[in-house]
Length: 250
Picture 1: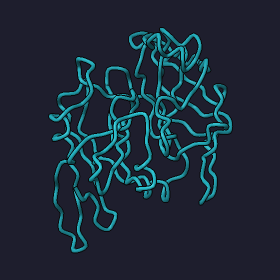
Picture 2: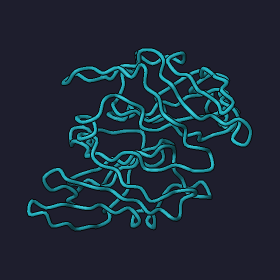
Picture 3: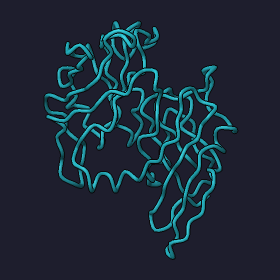
């Protein structure tokens, strides 16, 4: 399916089959990167004392801790990330430093913009986190544009009960989406692809992955050179099965 005409795209999701999902519109990351300074786009209190045992692979001792994905405006250099770069402020004013931070599980090629904070950040119903500060150098991984620094930026925390939202959609170059990742791939006949980034991981209420019914709930709006617009669903969903916060619209 041809998603883009003159690089103008808009992705809307009305994924009513997903827990807490809402209707959100996001525009291309290329425009965002060009027009916005480095900043966190979102922080979502996604797991309250509920990281699974498998999270110990990401960070020893993570099981049973809080998990908060922070989505950044630019992809970042993994070598610049340290737990002490981040400060979480609770409703009471108390602050916490994460026990560790990682780009996993959203660490496929060109995905490195979601930093998972792991630690103790308060409780959803008693002194929840309200703000994330970046207090030291966190650098973008730009090679063909000036490197940016997130130091001194901050973002309000999306509450646990609000659930995840779409925060970003971007066209994916073929030299990126043709590479194998940990998730499922688009069909071989795919001509174009859009990556949709959510503020947190998204599954069905029964914890299954998205399927055909959810594919049709994604809508892609196309704007032609003459200004006319059309709308349709992607032919397929991909980048599933890797437990991260990204989907491919194929």
